[in-house]
Length: 150
Image: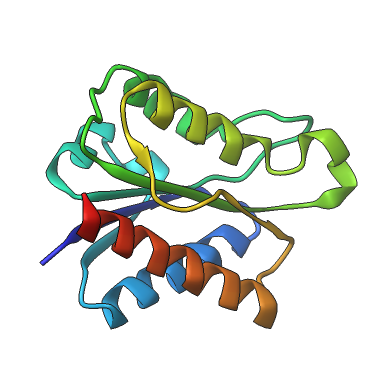
């Protein structure tokens, strides 16, 4: 059975909703998944799973979540070769070029550390709606399929 870890950071609750949607889909697909808030998580826990998912918010003008800075720095030190990863997150299109920038920043660290992107980054404008849920379900299915082929 494949294993997955979903790490999220949220202020408004939107990213916890995104993480819940992903976690529930993993469960429906038979993946052994755990979900954890970023300030409680240790990046090295990604060493123990097949699929790594981060759901961060972007603060202000493109900043990473304050409570996730240590996690982000620790993630940079890991060798994630052989891991499948995906990044998704809620943002606000009001911020234009900085819209969901933290999602992209985390995605780059995974790539730099040898992980394989199992699905395209997903950006959700504000709270996830019906169309976003479909996109997140497809995202999760792609991660599981990529892991199965790995």
